[in-house]
Image (tube, rainbow, N blue to C red; front, side, top):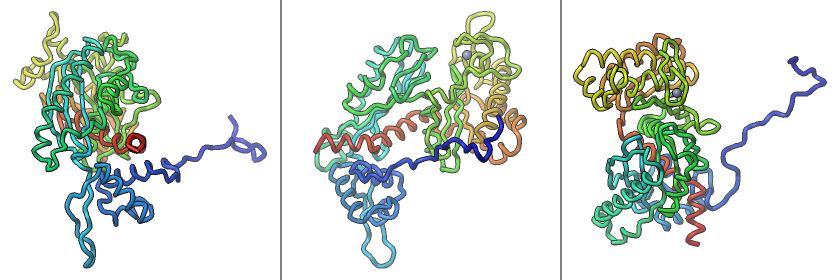
Length: 424
Ligand SMILES: [Zn+2]
Protein backbone atom coordinates (compact mmCIF):
# COMPACT_ATOMS: atom_id res chain seq x y z
CA UNK A 1 0.00 0.00 0.00
CA UNK A 2 1.35 3.43 -0.98
CA UNK A 3 1.70 6.10 1.71
CA UNK A 4 -1.09 8.67 1.54
CA UNK A 5 -0.28 11.74 -0.57
CA UNK A 6 -0.55 15.19 1.05
CA UNK A 7 -4.01 15.45 -0.55
CA UNK A 8 -5.10 12.22 1.17
CA UNK A 9 -4.76 12.80 4.90
CA UNK A 10 -4.01 9.98 7.31
CA UNK A 11 -7.03 8.31 8.87
CA UNK A 12 -7.85 9.67 12.33
CA UNK A 13 -5.60 8.08 14.96
CA UNK A 14 -6.64 7.24 18.47
CA UNK A 15 -4.69 9.05 21.17
CA UNK A 16 -4.75 7.29 24.53
CA UNK A 17 -6.95 8.62 27.31
CA UNK A 18 -5.84 8.77 30.96
CA UNK A 19 -6.99 5.79 33.02
CA UNK A 20 -9.01 8.00 35.37
CA UNK A 21 -11.26 10.78 34.14
CA UNK A 22 -11.51 14.11 35.95
CA UNK A 23 -14.73 13.03 37.68
CA UNK A 24 -14.58 14.04 41.29
CA UNK A 25 -16.85 11.31 42.51
CA UNK A 26 -16.79 10.24 46.10
CA UNK A 27 -15.88 6.64 45.20
CA UNK A 28 -13.03 7.71 42.90
CA UNK A 29 -11.55 9.94 45.60
CA UNK A 30 -11.92 7.33 48.35
CA UNK A 31 -10.40 4.61 46.17
CA UNK A 32 -7.47 6.86 45.19
CA UNK A 33 -6.74 7.77 48.81
CA UNK A 34 -7.13 4.18 50.06
CA UNK A 35 -4.81 2.80 47.36
CA UNK A 36 -2.16 5.45 48.00
CA UNK A 37 -2.17 4.48 51.68
CA UNK A 38 -2.20 0.74 50.84
CA UNK A 39 0.79 1.09 48.50
CA UNK A 40 2.76 3.03 51.10
CA UNK A 41 3.13 5.94 48.63
CA UNK A 42 1.46 8.34 51.10
CA UNK A 43 0.52 7.48 54.68
CA UNK A 44 -0.52 10.79 56.25
CA UNK A 45 -3.06 13.47 55.32
CA UNK A 46 -0.22 15.88 54.51
CA UNK A 47 1.49 13.38 52.17
CA UNK A 48 -1.80 12.46 50.50
CA UNK A 49 -2.53 16.01 49.29
CA UNK A 50 0.30 16.16 46.70
CA UNK A 51 0.19 12.40 45.99
CA UNK A 52 -3.52 12.42 45.13
CA UNK A 53 -3.45 15.88 43.54
CA UNK A 54 -6.55 16.78 45.55
CA UNK A 55 -7.41 19.71 47.79
CA UNK A 56 -6.51 19.45 51.48
CA UNK A 57 -10.15 19.50 52.56
CA UNK A 58 -11.08 16.81 49.99
CA UNK A 59 -8.30 14.54 51.28
CA UNK A 60 -9.21 15.21 54.88
CA UNK A 61 -12.88 14.36 54.28
CA UNK A 62 -11.94 11.18 52.38
CA UNK A 63 -9.56 10.00 55.12
CA UNK A 64 -12.18 10.65 57.81
CA UNK A 65 -14.75 8.72 55.78
CA UNK A 66 -12.36 5.76 55.29
CA UNK A 67 -11.53 5.77 59.03
CA UNK A 68 -15.24 5.90 59.76
CA UNK A 69 -16.02 2.99 57.42
CA UNK A 70 -13.24 0.96 59.06
CA UNK A 71 -11.10 0.51 55.93
CA UNK A 72 -8.27 2.63 57.35
CA UNK A 73 -7.00 3.00 60.89
CA UNK A 74 -4.38 5.12 62.61
CA UNK A 75 -1.26 3.02 63.10
CA UNK A 76 0.97 5.18 65.27
CA UNK A 77 2.53 8.44 64.19
CA UNK A 78 5.18 9.50 61.74
CA UNK A 79 7.61 12.36 62.38
CA UNK A 80 7.10 15.50 60.31
CA UNK A 81 9.82 17.76 58.94
CA UNK A 82 10.72 20.69 61.17
CA UNK A 83 9.19 21.07 64.60
CA UNK A 84 5.55 20.27 63.72
CA UNK A 85 3.77 17.71 65.81
CA UNK A 86 4.01 14.12 64.45
CA UNK A 87 1.32 13.21 61.93
CA UNK A 88 -1.06 10.25 62.27
CA UNK A 89 0.28 7.33 60.22
CA UNK A 90 -2.55 5.75 58.23
CA UNK A 91 -2.74 2.08 57.26
CA UNK A 92 -5.32 -0.40 56.01
CA UNK A 93 -7.20 -1.66 59.01
CA UNK A 94 -6.86 -5.35 59.93
CA UNK A 95 -10.49 -5.05 61.07
CA UNK A 96 -11.61 -3.56 57.76
CA UNK A 97 -12.63 -6.91 56.35
CA UNK A 98 -11.58 -10.40 55.37
CA UNK A 99 -10.50 -11.63 51.95
CA UNK A 100 -11.00 -15.36 51.23
CA UNK A 101 -8.48 -17.05 48.96
CA UNK A 102 -8.52 -20.36 47.07
CA UNK A 103 -5.63 -21.44 44.87
CA UNK A 104 -7.01 -24.59 43.28
CA UNK A 105 -4.64 -26.94 41.46
CA UNK A 106 -5.43 -30.14 39.56
CA UNK A 107 -5.45 -32.31 42.69
CA UNK A 108 -5.26 -30.00 45.71
CA UNK A 109 -6.05 -26.48 46.87
CA UNK A 110 -4.33 -23.92 49.10
CA UNK A 111 -6.94 -21.93 51.03
CA UNK A 112 -6.48 -18.92 53.27
CA UNK A 113 -8.22 -16.07 55.07
CA UNK A 114 -6.34 -12.76 55.13
CA UNK A 115 -7.24 -9.33 56.43
CA UNK A 116 -6.76 -6.02 54.61
CA UNK A 117 -3.36 -5.54 56.29
CA UNK A 118 -2.22 -8.76 54.51
CA UNK A 119 -2.08 -10.72 57.75
CA UNK A 120 -2.79 -14.42 57.14
CA UNK A 121 -5.41 -15.36 59.75
CA UNK A 122 -5.76 -19.01 58.77
CA UNK A 123 -4.45 -21.27 56.05
CA UNK A 124 -4.89 -24.87 54.96
CA UNK A 125 -4.07 -27.28 52.16
CA UNK A 126 -6.77 -29.76 51.11
CA UNK A 127 -7.14 -32.50 48.51
CA UNK A 128 -9.61 -31.71 45.73
CA UNK A 129 -9.82 -33.25 42.27
CA UNK A 130 -10.90 -30.80 39.57
CA UNK A 131 -12.12 -33.77 37.52
CA UNK A 132 -14.99 -34.12 40.02
CA UNK A 133 -16.60 -31.09 38.34
CA UNK A 134 -17.41 -27.55 39.48
CA UNK A 135 -20.25 -28.27 41.87
CA UNK A 136 -18.38 -30.80 44.04
CA UNK A 137 -15.10 -28.84 44.01
CA UNK A 138 -16.67 -25.44 44.74
CA UNK A 139 -18.88 -26.92 47.48
CA UNK A 140 -15.73 -28.28 49.16
CA UNK A 141 -13.92 -24.94 48.72
CA UNK A 142 -16.88 -22.98 50.14
CA UNK A 143 -17.18 -25.28 53.16
CA UNK A 144 -13.45 -25.16 53.90
CA UNK A 145 -13.29 -21.37 53.52
CA UNK A 146 -16.25 -20.89 55.87
CA UNK A 147 -14.57 -23.17 58.46
CA UNK A 148 -11.25 -21.40 58.07
CA UNK A 149 -12.96 -18.09 58.72
CA UNK A 150 -14.59 -19.51 61.86
CA UNK A 151 -11.19 -20.71 63.05
CA UNK A 152 -9.75 -17.23 62.45
CA UNK A 153 -12.33 -15.49 64.65
CA UNK A 154 -10.87 -16.38 68.10
CA UNK A 155 -7.56 -14.89 66.93
CA UNK A 156 -9.34 -11.69 65.99
CA UNK A 157 -11.24 -11.55 69.26
CA UNK A 158 -8.00 -11.90 71.19
CA UNK A 159 -6.58 -8.86 69.48
CA UNK A 160 -9.73 -6.80 69.40
CA UNK A 161 -10.38 -4.47 72.32
CA UNK A 162 -13.95 -3.70 71.22
CA UNK A 163 -15.06 -7.32 70.97
CA UNK A 164 -16.77 -6.68 67.60
CA UNK A 165 -14.62 -9.25 65.79
CA UNK A 166 -17.50 -11.37 64.56
CA UNK A 167 -18.78 -8.32 62.71
CA UNK A 168 -15.76 -8.16 60.39
CA UNK A 169 -17.24 -8.58 56.90
CA UNK A 170 -15.95 -10.68 53.99
CA UNK A 171 -15.00 -8.06 51.39
CA UNK A 172 -13.82 -10.26 48.50
CA UNK A 173 -13.19 -13.84 47.39
CA UNK A 174 -10.43 -14.77 44.95
CA UNK A 175 -10.15 -18.17 43.29
CA UNK A 176 -7.47 -19.49 40.95
CA UNK A 177 -8.14 -22.46 38.65
CA UNK A 178 -5.70 -24.58 36.60
CA UNK A 179 -7.02 -23.67 33.16
CA UNK A 180 -7.88 -20.74 30.87
CA UNK A 181 -10.43 -18.35 32.39
CA UNK A 182 -12.40 -15.34 31.22
CA UNK A 183 -11.90 -13.07 34.22
CA UNK A 184 -14.37 -10.46 32.99
CA UNK A 185 -17.24 -12.97 32.96
CA UNK A 186 -15.76 -15.03 35.80
CA UNK A 187 -15.95 -18.36 33.93
CA UNK A 188 -13.45 -21.05 32.84
CA UNK A 189 -13.00 -21.36 29.07
CA UNK A 190 -12.64 -24.92 27.72
CA UNK A 191 -10.12 -26.03 30.34
CA UNK A 192 -8.55 -29.25 28.96
CA UNK A 193 -8.12 -31.06 32.31
CA UNK A 194 -11.40 -29.89 33.89
CA UNK A 195 -14.44 -31.69 32.44
CA UNK A 196 -17.75 -29.91 33.11
CA UNK A 197 -16.19 -26.55 33.99
CA UNK A 198 -16.54 -24.77 30.63
CA UNK A 199 -18.59 -21.56 31.11
CA UNK A 200 -19.57 -22.54 34.69
CA UNK A 201 -20.32 -19.28 36.58
CA UNK A 202 -17.56 -19.70 39.21
CA UNK A 203 -17.27 -16.04 40.24
CA UNK A 204 -21.04 -15.49 40.33
CA UNK A 205 -21.52 -18.55 42.55
CA UNK A 206 -18.82 -17.53 45.06
CA UNK A 207 -20.12 -13.96 45.05
CA UNK A 208 -23.59 -15.25 45.95
CA UNK A 209 -22.27 -17.64 48.61
CA UNK A 210 -20.19 -15.03 50.45
CA UNK A 211 -22.18 -11.89 49.59
CA UNK A 212 -19.23 -9.95 48.17
CA UNK A 213 -17.34 -9.46 44.88
CA UNK A 214 -15.52 -12.57 43.61
CA UNK A 215 -12.52 -12.70 41.28
CA UNK A 216 -11.60 -15.69 39.08
CA UNK A 217 -8.04 -15.95 37.79
CA UNK A 218 -5.82 -18.55 36.16
CA UNK A 219 -3.56 -20.28 38.72
CA UNK A 220 -0.30 -19.47 36.94
CA UNK A 221 -1.32 -15.81 36.60
CA UNK A 222 -1.85 -15.73 40.36
CA UNK A 223 1.66 -17.11 40.92
CA UNK A 224 3.15 -14.60 38.49
CA UNK A 225 1.43 -11.71 40.26
CA UNK A 226 2.38 -12.95 43.74
CA UNK A 227 5.99 -13.37 42.72
CA UNK A 228 6.15 -9.93 41.03
CA UNK A 229 4.65 -8.12 44.03
CA UNK A 230 6.97 -9.88 46.49
CA UNK A 231 9.99 -8.52 44.61
CA UNK A 232 11.24 -4.95 43.99
CA UNK A 233 9.41 -3.08 41.21
CA UNK A 234 12.44 -3.26 38.90
CA UNK A 235 11.87 -7.02 38.57
CA UNK A 236 8.98 -6.46 36.13
CA UNK A 237 8.10 -7.29 33.42
CA UNK A 238 8.11 -10.73 35.03
CA UNK A 239 7.43 -13.93 33.13
CA UNK A 240 6.42 -16.92 35.27
CA UNK A 241 6.78 -20.39 33.76
CA UNK A 242 5.18 -23.18 35.77
CA UNK A 243 6.46 -26.67 35.09
CA UNK A 244 4.21 -29.15 36.87
CA UNK A 245 1.74 -31.77 35.66
CA UNK A 246 1.28 -29.34 32.75
CA UNK A 247 3.15 -26.25 31.62
CA UNK A 248 1.74 -22.73 31.84
CA UNK A 249 2.90 -19.13 31.83
CA UNK A 250 1.89 -15.77 33.27
CA UNK A 251 3.14 -12.28 32.47
CA UNK A 252 3.16 -9.27 34.78
CA UNK A 253 3.83 -6.00 32.94
CA UNK A 254 6.10 -3.17 33.93
CA UNK A 255 3.34 -1.47 35.96
CA UNK A 256 2.94 -4.62 38.05
CA UNK A 257 -0.36 -5.60 36.44
CA UNK A 258 -1.23 -8.96 34.83
CA UNK A 259 -1.33 -9.10 31.05
CA UNK A 260 -4.45 -11.07 30.07
CA UNK A 261 -4.58 -10.62 26.31
CA UNK A 262 -7.83 -10.17 24.38
CA UNK A 263 -9.63 -13.22 25.78
CA UNK A 264 -7.66 -14.07 28.89
CA UNK A 265 -5.53 -16.67 27.09
CA UNK A 266 -2.22 -14.77 27.26
CA UNK A 267 0.55 -16.88 28.78
CA UNK A 268 -1.12 -20.19 27.92
CA UNK A 269 2.20 -21.50 26.60
CA UNK A 270 1.69 -25.23 27.23
CA UNK A 271 0.53 -25.87 23.68
CA UNK A 272 3.36 -24.16 21.86
CA UNK A 273 5.68 -26.43 19.88
CA UNK A 274 9.45 -25.97 19.98
CA UNK A 275 12.26 -27.06 17.66
CA UNK A 276 13.39 -30.64 18.17
CA UNK A 277 10.36 -31.75 20.20
CA UNK A 278 9.21 -35.38 19.68
CA UNK A 279 5.73 -36.09 18.26
CA UNK A 280 4.08 -37.08 21.55
CA UNK A 281 0.28 -36.69 21.61
CA UNK A 282 -1.09 -33.88 23.79
CA UNK A 283 -4.39 -33.61 25.72
CA UNK A 284 -5.34 -30.73 23.40
CA UNK A 285 -5.38 -33.00 20.34
CA UNK A 286 -2.15 -31.72 18.75
CA UNK A 287 1.25 -33.44 18.88
CA UNK A 288 4.60 -32.21 20.18
CA UNK A 289 3.21 -29.48 22.48
CA UNK A 290 5.77 -28.40 25.12
CA UNK A 291 3.39 -29.70 27.82
CA UNK A 292 3.25 -33.13 26.14
CA UNK A 293 7.04 -33.47 25.94
CA UNK A 294 8.58 -31.51 28.84
CA UNK A 295 6.14 -31.33 31.79
CA UNK A 296 6.41 -33.43 34.94
CA UNK A 297 3.54 -35.47 33.46
CA UNK A 298 5.58 -36.13 30.31
CA UNK A 299 8.61 -37.17 32.37
CA UNK A 300 6.41 -39.48 34.46
CA UNK A 301 5.20 -41.15 31.25
CA UNK A 302 8.73 -41.53 29.92
CA UNK A 303 10.05 -43.05 33.16
CA UNK A 304 7.17 -45.53 33.29
CA UNK A 305 7.64 -46.81 29.72
CA UNK A 306 6.69 -49.31 28.47
CA UNK A 307 4.25 -49.55 31.41
CA UNK A 308 1.95 -46.87 32.87
CA UNK A 309 3.39 -43.47 34.00
CA UNK A 310 5.11 -43.42 37.41
CA UNK A 311 3.27 -41.22 39.95
CA UNK A 312 4.36 -37.54 39.83
CA UNK A 313 5.42 -37.68 43.50
CA UNK A 314 7.78 -40.50 42.59
CA UNK A 315 9.35 -38.37 39.83
CA UNK A 316 10.25 -35.84 42.52
CA UNK A 317 11.63 -38.55 44.80
CA UNK A 318 13.72 -40.04 42.00
CA UNK A 319 15.08 -36.59 41.15
CA UNK A 320 15.92 -35.79 44.75
CA UNK A 321 17.85 -39.11 44.88
CA UNK A 322 19.71 -38.25 41.66
CA UNK A 323 18.31 -41.24 39.73
CA UNK A 324 20.19 -41.18 36.36
CA UNK A 325 17.13 -41.87 34.15
CA UNK A 326 15.09 -39.17 35.93
CA UNK A 327 17.93 -36.63 35.74
CA UNK A 328 18.45 -37.35 32.02
CA UNK A 329 14.71 -36.89 31.36
CA UNK A 330 14.68 -33.56 33.23
CA UNK A 331 17.75 -32.34 31.33
CA UNK A 332 16.07 -33.13 28.02
CA UNK A 333 12.88 -31.37 29.15
CA UNK A 334 14.90 -28.38 30.38
CA UNK A 335 16.50 -28.01 26.94
CA UNK A 336 13.08 -27.81 25.26
CA UNK A 337 11.74 -25.38 27.88
CA UNK A 338 14.90 -23.31 27.42
CA UNK A 339 14.12 -22.98 23.69
CA UNK A 340 10.64 -21.72 24.53
CA UNK A 341 11.95 -19.31 27.19
CA UNK A 342 14.49 -17.89 24.71
CA UNK A 343 11.66 -17.11 22.26
CA UNK A 344 9.53 -15.50 24.98
CA UNK A 345 12.48 -13.46 26.24
CA UNK A 346 12.89 -11.99 22.75
CA UNK A 347 9.24 -11.16 22.53
CA UNK A 348 8.65 -9.69 26.01
CA UNK A 349 12.11 -8.58 27.14
CA UNK A 350 11.28 -9.43 30.77
CA UNK A 351 13.45 -8.25 33.67
CA UNK A 352 12.94 -11.61 35.31
CA UNK A 353 11.90 -15.12 34.29
CA UNK A 354 10.76 -17.24 37.21
CA UNK A 355 10.59 -21.01 36.91
CA UNK A 356 8.05 -22.51 39.33
CA UNK A 357 6.02 -25.66 39.90
CA UNK A 358 6.75 -29.00 41.52
CA UNK A 359 9.53 -30.01 39.15
CA UNK A 360 11.64 -26.89 39.78
CA UNK A 361 11.27 -27.36 43.52
CA UNK A 362 12.49 -30.97 43.32
CA UNK A 363 15.73 -30.42 41.47
CA UNK A 364 18.11 -27.69 40.32
CA UNK A 365 18.62 -29.58 37.05
CA UNK A 366 15.59 -27.93 35.51
CA UNK A 367 16.72 -24.36 36.19
CA UNK A 368 20.30 -25.12 35.17
CA UNK A 369 19.17 -26.64 31.86
CA UNK A 370 16.70 -23.85 31.04
CA UNK A 371 19.34 -21.22 31.84
CA UNK A 372 22.05 -22.72 29.67
CA UNK A 373 19.81 -23.00 26.58
CA UNK A 374 17.97 -19.69 27.07
CA UNK A 375 21.14 -17.62 27.53
CA UNK A 376 22.78 -19.36 24.59
CA UNK A 377 19.81 -18.92 22.24
CA UNK A 378 18.63 -15.40 23.12
CA UNK A 379 20.60 -12.35 21.95
CA UNK A 380 22.57 -10.22 24.44
CA UNK A 381 20.29 -7.17 24.38
CA UNK A 382 17.40 -9.27 25.70
CA UNK A 383 19.47 -11.14 28.30
CA UNK A 384 21.93 -8.44 29.41
CA UNK A 385 20.03 -7.71 32.63
CA UNK A 386 17.78 -10.77 32.67
CA UNK A 387 17.37 -12.65 35.94
CA UNK A 388 16.36 -16.28 35.30
CA UNK A 389 15.71 -18.06 38.56
CA UNK A 390 13.45 -20.27 40.68
CA UNK A 391 10.35 -18.96 42.44
CA UNK A 392 11.01 -17.08 45.70
CA UNK A 393 7.57 -17.89 47.16
CA UNK A 394 7.35 -21.53 46.11
CA UNK A 395 3.94 -23.12 46.60
CA UNK A 396 2.57 -19.96 48.29
CA UNK A 397 3.04 -17.75 45.22
CA UNK A 398 -0.58 -18.38 44.21
CA UNK A 399 -1.99 -17.29 47.58
CA UNK A 400 0.24 -14.19 47.47
CA UNK A 401 -1.14 -13.22 44.06
CA UNK A 402 -4.69 -13.86 45.26
CA UNK A 403 -4.04 -11.60 48.28
CA UNK A 404 -2.98 -8.77 45.96
CA UNK A 405 -6.00 -9.20 43.66
CA UNK A 406 -8.41 -9.44 46.60
CA UNK A 407 -7.20 -6.37 48.48
CA UNK A 408 -6.94 -4.31 45.29
CA UNK A 409 -10.51 -5.33 44.44
CA UNK A 410 -11.72 -4.20 47.87
CA UNK A 411 -10.05 -0.80 47.31
CA UNK A 412 -11.29 -0.39 43.72
CA UNK A 413 -13.66 2.45 42.84
CA UNK A 414 -16.32 -0.15 42.05
CA UNK A 415 -16.14 -1.91 45.44
CA UNK A 416 -15.86 1.30 47.46
CA UNK A 417 -18.85 2.62 45.48
CA UNK A 418 -20.82 -0.48 46.54
CA UNK A 419 -19.81 0.09 50.14
CA UNK A 420 -21.07 3.69 50.02
CA UNK A 421 -24.30 2.66 48.31
CA UNK A 422 -24.95 -0.14 50.80
CA UNK A 423 -24.66 1.82 54.01
CA UNK A 424 -25.90 5.28 52.95
ZN1 LIG B 1 -1.27 -29.36 23.40
